[in-house]
Image (tube, rainbow, N blue to C red):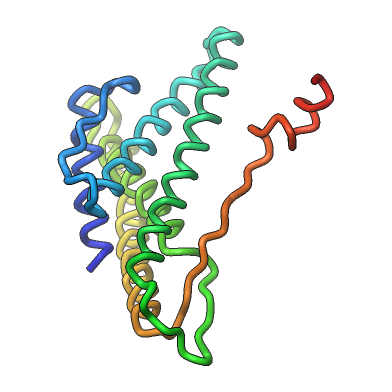
Length: 200
């Protein structure tokens, strides 16, 4: 099942990142470049780094200039994340290019890679909520509350994993078909963001 592979790779990437816990640490992707695992590992590393950027920028004591620098870096990272999702969807398009959709085939509300993107973020939520549930310096009420949230997140991962596998089974059987829609983000484009092009 693809979802099991995703979850295993995401957990490995998160564990590898936290050996260093450094946003700028070089990525040492352990999987062959042409493998789906390589894409998944790279995707989750991007997400993990961005997760920690979001933590930094929310420091109420951060210098405003430094905070703006982090915000711009997060925007750039988010564009990289979006590009990676579209790249993973291109992988699936290639995988299923020989499949002929049935006459009554339907398109899904989201593509496989965007569902996998949510699974990657969910892996991060689970990792960090588990940390909170096991925090020795927090009180029992905090740990219990976080344990309850962790149980919900684990159920969400189970449900989302099943949905991803069913979607890919439907695509493979021709019951559904997929398209890759570019996100076409406008705020980073100097030709599309009016604040930017009015200054030119």
